[in-house]
Length: 54
View (tube, one colour):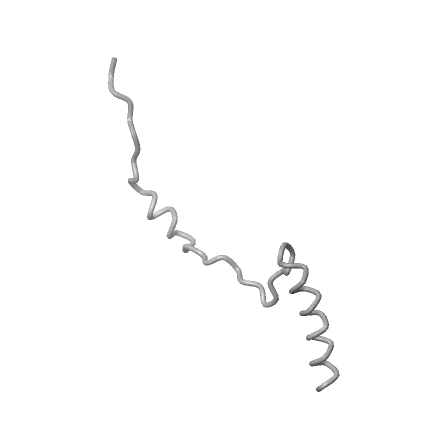
């Protein structure tokens, strides 16, 4: 029985760069979902305080 082909990287880099390798889009305000609840509560009050100060 013939040996099976393991892998081939031929042409893969060209295909990947054809439309450019993109960086993932970064969001201005990342979600606080899953963060420490104590931190989120304090953060909410801190934001309110800075709004009043302005």
